[in-house]
Amino acid sequence: EETVAWWTLSCGRVLGVVNGMMLEFDKSTLAPLGLVISGDMLLGRQVAIVDSGLEECLINFEEDGMDGEDCADPSEATENYREQAVLVFDDDGVTVVQPNADGSYWRKIVRNKIARMKEKRREKAAIDFAQAFLPVKNEDEAKEKIASSWGPYKSTSGVAKSTDLEPVKKTKELKVYTR
Image (cartoon, rainbow, N blue to C red):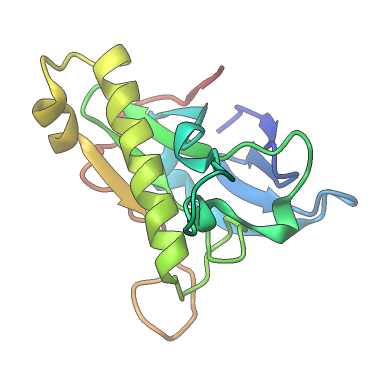
């Protein structure tokens, strides 16, 4: 619970671990916006921020079609923007913390098709991460260790009470890694 860590993602969003919880903060005032992962689900896990979907987001203007359209997000169109995956992991598995449709990470309810396509790329990044850093032998084993988290909402009531990161099990302390 004493671990404090801050991340400014390439899209400008700010995440932080404070009082044992992961929160999203306003990028200009650093005022807390909302809960991303509750303390009980973060305890004993590690956090990694990794790039995801770079190759898929390259657009070939020589060909017809809308290739890369699922990568387009005008609100995040900056020179340094790259899609990233927020991962929470331990030896038992990796959980992809999926952002909301608007790109925020604090927990809301609705996701759209483009968001789901981005989620798939983040899950692929988590599989690659698991193969590199967890004791797995192949991609199939890595897939068994991957779960996604959309936050504390389990109904449409809108009350955030906890974040469910199962099947990742609770352990003892939080370790933070970034690349």
